[in-house]
Image 1 (cartoon, helix red, strand yellow):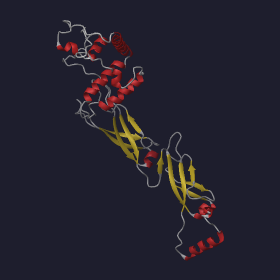
Image 2: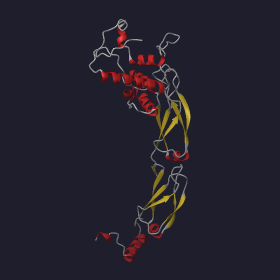
Image 3: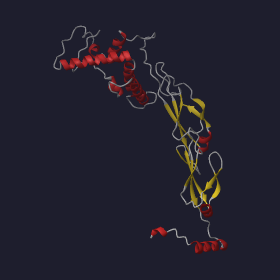
Image 4: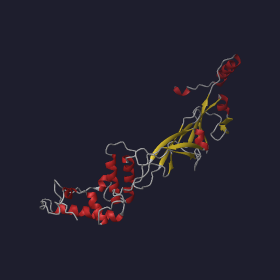
Length: 323
């Protein structure tokens, strides 16, 4: 075992794995895993353009390997506690003189904490592979993302899309071909919803699992309907006599036309609900119909005379409340 000196100038640097992952020391295993996945997606060399991405990714993976296993984490925590207690008990202690064993090589006093952790966990240095190269750390591949745009009718009925999964670009598998898949878009899909294609993301390192591929669905604006979540909105023009007397009118919906009863005395802006006529789901969305009264133009004598008669006989003043 190497002799490590906690000196200001030649100290073995104790890495704070909790700080590297951005979690508290009392963080749960799930918190640690989520933190690792978030950082791995950001710094994975296959997808990141940051200059220090590879170094950061190795550091993040090293921290996760130490903390994900309960026994390793317990050993690491004990080591940190011993270090903290020694510093608290002897804050002014000076480092002992170098020993012959510690001075054997320049590397002895600068050996990385990760090597010491590996020794602590395994009792020996990491073995080399048969070809003499250092074993690569296993790491899951990064998730990949793409988006598609579908029509509102396709969101209602469901559809299929041909999606191309890009080939890796910065890995040993760069020669792999892109994959083309037919992806089923289920009925009732909402704008912004992501469809997960498990195991079709970036390749892992050192035999690690591939990441996932997420396909974000966008819904194109519609010429007639307006979408709000699973609900559909429609502005419906009606004649003045339909609003005044009431009427049964045909209304378009994504599932086909239906009959709607307009109550007598309806005004412009009134909303009527067609339950369950929005996007499919459990429960389905609704369709809201907003009435808009459209007045016929007085463009011929007979209609003009009718308007004059209505004005004289009704006595209606729409601004009576103005005072």
